[in-house]
Image (tube, rainbow, N blue to C red):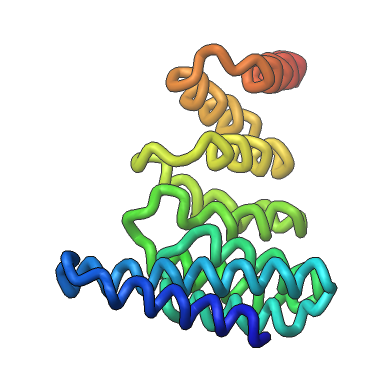
Length: 186
């Protein structure tokens, strides 16, 4: 523990002595140095399988920056991995609600529901995000959720919408064609 505190102190000292910087630049550099030191410590504890400390420090980091997608998903993943599912879901919901302009804000929560076969919870989260040009996985998880619920028309609509944006995605084409065949056979 002393090493990461020393790293933060050293980083803060170096940053504070940079007199050519503005106060805002120094503050930003200090925050980056602290974030980097804490992230390195999380890695040390993670590789040493000290998951409770990892979780505690990730919670602390997330309180500092609720807009960091990687922090939210790392914390959620570790909570899920240690069977703290309610806490993980709470982090995913909080991230989505705190980051309304992030086109991918609903992805961690949608993936959580999808992996637990709660497919009906995915469309209300993901459909509104499609207007924001989200990550391709938002389209995939939505299309697969519709298919799992037997809503093949909606599934095909989402694959077509995705392929209009990414026409060279061969896996998506195969999925779309498979859904088309299912619809024709029905």
